[in-house]
Length: 498
Image 1: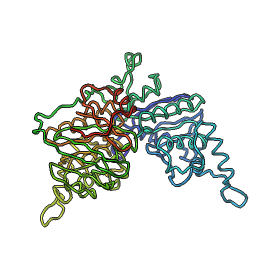
Image 2: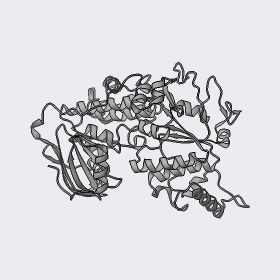
Image 3: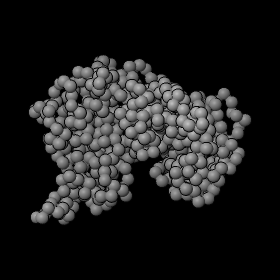
Image 4: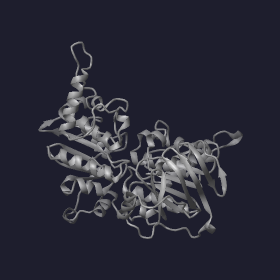
């Protein structure tokens, strides 16, 4: 319990050795609380925890880690400017006679661990220079290096490409066959079914309690069954609703020969009320275009035109002033101020506009009204708008990020993985709001690795490779598989979007 709020009620489950046990539920359902209790971060009010035949209910985090219970957090918890060997053995570095780190022994132990778990990476490589999937694997190996017998994976596929996810899953399944157990938390139900095909290895939590599966679900478990169980209702998938008008075919955004970091003469146009999906591998130019339009990356040449007027974007302040907003895929670094309240975060993008009161000072009344409106619109689960964002579940934090940007009434909404870490019902609510915004003329650039979601929401798809636009496809029933095929083939020559 947290005050008067019961986060978990009579939760019981068993996890056999050598299995992947998936934990699913909406934001705030109690998943994080449960794994925090298992790992020792939080103490349960009642009930007992047994591990390998011994009760560990009163053991500390350190004692549980020594027993073999390890957690790998949603974001790769690595020290970027230490090398692989140092990260694997952090806190367990071998020392020599006078207490200094024995570098030779450290690299020897790390090399043995990397060979044992078949991760082909140089132990001397700096973590900051490695891709996200390698960083997550190093996280897992560190857990096993410390004697991990059950490893908790909290949203481990966040921001990974589909190929990276498959790579990580193969790694997890290989370790499972050696007897390691995993608790896997994910909002992507296809991932859950892939890693835990046996319904006995899936636990659904709703409002702090475990939801039982009926025999039909157990015999023929599907994503639809799981979605119904975690939401308590059938969840309709959002389909793109075209605006009632084409707004006279007017262009909201025109980019001409935009050049910068990983961006080479990128040219495209986006109409008013249009949703354009962006597709490309990391550093292909898709993400770089988004960040350049918001002033987070610098362009060396090229033009940006909003509503027929050439604008100069040198900072996020310039972008906001021209009606451009950006939802980053990294909410912790670029989305919210975690120690501030929901009220303060929602109003950040409109402090100098909507929230001005008398004598140009901040109006507390307007700030509270705006925060309450956004909380209701996005169904953000809070006790009060004065709750610190840090106290919210990951999915509700993401909703605060989206709310902050929608609050500014943008002309161009740039969304990079806007539904990341969000349960299926909340995801569809956000997609529906994005859809609705386009009916008033808001244009959207939508970047996600979830191609099933992308093809449901986009009017057109723009493909990037080596910093250039390489293909443009009208979304006339295109499938996610076809998107992957076009992306991987690097088809087409650089062209303008007409």
